[in-house]
Each structure stands twice: as structure tokens, then as C-alpha cells.
Length: 258
Image (cartoon, rainbow, N blue to C red; front, side, top):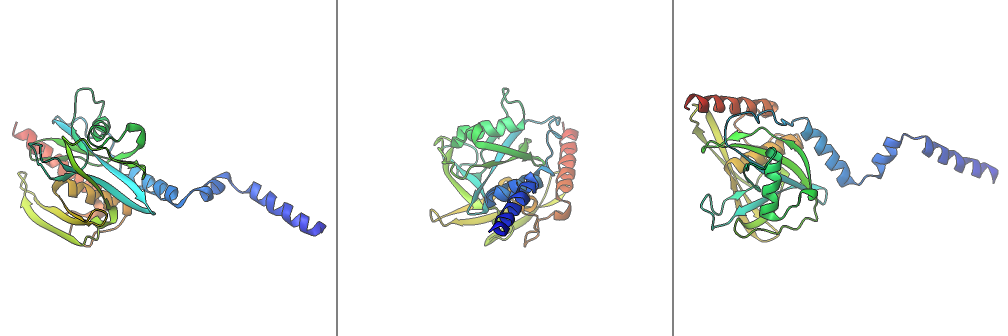
């Protein structure tokens, strides 16, 4: 009897002596552990405001990540057919910078709230990825964030026709992917990517291409730490520096033409 009590007390003492960090880690859910892992990975690649000084008109997009059944998903919107620019295209929530926006993050969050009703208190911003200069001359910054899986979009019909999610891993091993090469104005050879995704939830097919596809692809490579099964067109082992070099070369070319 006494021996059993001593054994029990010994177990209790051992539990109390274990590091609090270990006990806290064990109490986390698998989704919380996954979220912490992804945040740690992406924050290593955060460019912050490194390119905010570039003298170009600015825009931002929000890359909203959610977790469903232990898997990472990325939220997309379909532009309203009433819009003059790129009606019906798949894109991320986002838009042009406004004077009241403090930075690229503020632009992305404001646009996401306007387009799909995503409140700022429902978003956990993780990082900014290297921006890209569009054909129209805008410096577009992708802002990566976690949103809760319970978020229910409230789309603004004037801007958004549909909202859907895609498994992040799809952009590394897609069922339907194509790419085409083109020559940039800076005389660089690049690939533009296109993914076709059949959404099982609503039995719809969506084409994700261009800059939206590129941002999704970059995020998937970084977050999942895997190579795609297809040629990306840049060195994925040196992805962030490659993106930054291309950005600076594009910017220098734009400046030379002013």
C-alpha cells in the first residue's frame, strides 16, 4: 500500500519538474503546432518594408491561409464581372494603396475587409514576400496571414463574384498545370504559370494564373519546404534572393525609361 503511494507521488513530482515549455507543447492541438511551424518558417523569409522605398505606385494582396483537417488551404476570390479591370479573373483580396494606409499590410487588410468582410481582428499577419512589378507599373506586395477556419466570407458583390479555397500543396503537385515562356521588357526569359483547380465543394472549376499563381507557388514552396514537380523557371533553392534580384532588375529598367 505504502509502496504504491510512493510510486504515485514520484510520478506527480516528475511531471511537476518537467520543463513548462514541454508541457505547454504537449497541450497544443495538432493544428496549433502546424500553425506555429508555418509561422516560424515564413518569418525567416519576411522581407518587411525592405522595398517600400521604391518609387512606384503601390498595391498589396492578402494571401489568407486557413487550416482544415490538418491541411493548409489558401483563400481566393473571383473578380466581379461588373469590374472594368480583369473581370472574372481569380485573384487574392487586395488593391491599390490609399493615402490613409500606413504600409503594405494596411492596404491588404483594408482591401480584404472591403471585399470579403474579413475583419482585422480575424487576421494574424505572418510576413511579406518579395513584391513584383506588374506590366502596369505597380509594385504589388503579397502579405501572408492566417485566418480562422470558421471565417465565413461576406462578399461585396460589386467586387467579388465568388470565394473558394485550394490546398496549398496543390501548387506543388497540381492535377492540371501549364506554363509558357515570355520575354520581359528587361530582356529576361520568364515562365508564367497556370493552374486549373476543380473545387469538390461546389463542383466548379477555377483557373489560377499570372501573378496570382506566382504568389501562390512561391508561398507553397516556402511554407511546405518542397520542390514542385514541374519547372518553376527560377532556382527554388535560392527562391527569395532570385525574386529580389528580378525585382531590382525590373525596377532599374523602369527607372531608366522615366
